[in-house]
Length: 199
Image 1 (cartoon, rainbow, N blue to C red):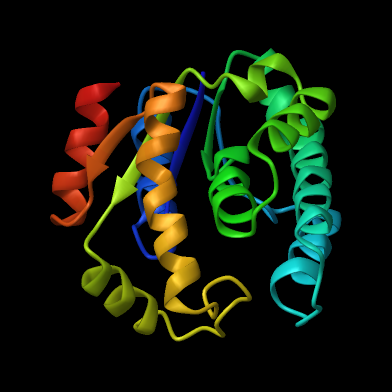
Image 2 (image 1 turned 90 degrees about the vertical axis):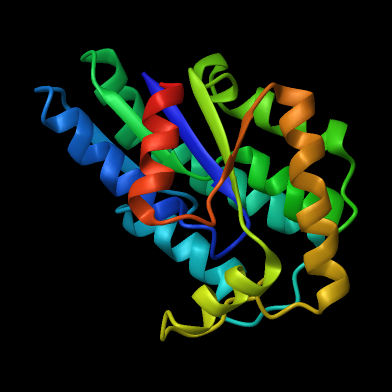
């Protein structure tokens, strides 16, 4: 089973992914969690840093291609082996993030992003078994981000106009791909119960 948890920065994706990992491990399943685009793979982590940390002024299409390259490495080397053994893959983000950030946010054609993804990744990657989009009010999201105590990444530092484009993108992506929107403004346990209820 391949599950994706999506949403803006600060909505709690990684937290919920880790809770789901524990949930499935208690059932005796093999589970892997991927935090796209870096995960626990050095080459993917380097690509992540190139896009988000090092401060390069990259073309939007370059971002799409680098994100896709990182995904390919994670998918082939981490996710596919687990799925072939009958395990569970839980990903915080997938190409829907690229649609939101590089598509709606940076102006790359949605069809071009989809084509690049389809040409590069497998059909299973493109069609997860379950997809969730976590949403919280902007004020809550920004408070969570400020409390992380880590350096601000490239897209987190972009102006409010860009953030609004990304915010507005997620309901459209949910509609286009039949994804469940989860209100993540409750407690961690409440949000987790909503997700498990859907599963």
